[in-house]
Length: 415
Ligand SMILES: [Zn+2]
Image: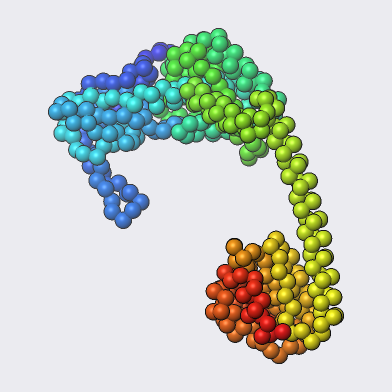
């Protein structure tokens, strides 16, 4: 077993020996032209650069490729937008060709890389503890822009996660060493393995916590992980899926939460720990108010129903009964019209609104009444009262921007 193995094909892989290598001067060994499907109509030509040494980690094992640039001898800077391992060779993708034999500087976006190292090491520490305490294996790993998603093949509860989080953060406090070794055979060392490794085995050790096959760069000590926070968990295929944030990502999340809770404290005039109680109180009040509103609406509908009923009884020859109200909603209005047309001899018209805002209308007609055809009626009324809307022969709906007096004057012809 040894602890230095740093070649990938013809490229010296610097992050395996020293994950803190931020840049290197390298010679271009190859420049591969590739047609890239952009997903749009046109395909794009890109160039895959093979170097004699690199600090760039290629996409693999659930971790995205490193970001960074290549600086040419004439100081031109090319973005490295992707890094892939192709047949064991690390290929850096850029948008312009670089001549074979050129000497360039390959430079990482170190901030992004370091955040990923913190999170990847944090995930190993956490999953090492899961394995130790519950014997579960890691069966899925995905790193996105600001969190890590992990699947394990066993059930974990909220209490389990609370305990694991405390232990993992204690592991950070202990600041133990993280290192990589290369066993000569798989039997030489006990380790967790989430990948079917076809290449030589690299095992990342966290002293006293974990041994796991992994090809990615890690921080040197657990202290650098800084902080581990479990964000969420759910049942997944008989096991558990959870998301973690470590290091800077966890700190940023803490900042967001602090800001959010500050807003809630101001909105609710509540103490920090009492925001949820204030939210519960507001929610309860809203529910009570909603019940009151529903009850009042029913009472208002009943009042109009009785009024309409009396009006129809007292004026059996009136061909047009009208309701005006500022607050009736569509459901109330429709209920009143639908019921009204059963006994009214002609049409029943409901107008909801005010002279300033205009009126929404629903107008219905008794089944037996021949006149008027409400579609024609709607056309005439819309023209006369600056309105819009329509419907069927028996029922129309729309709005007018006229005043109540104008509407009543226009409807007189139908009474
Ligand atoms: Zn790993």
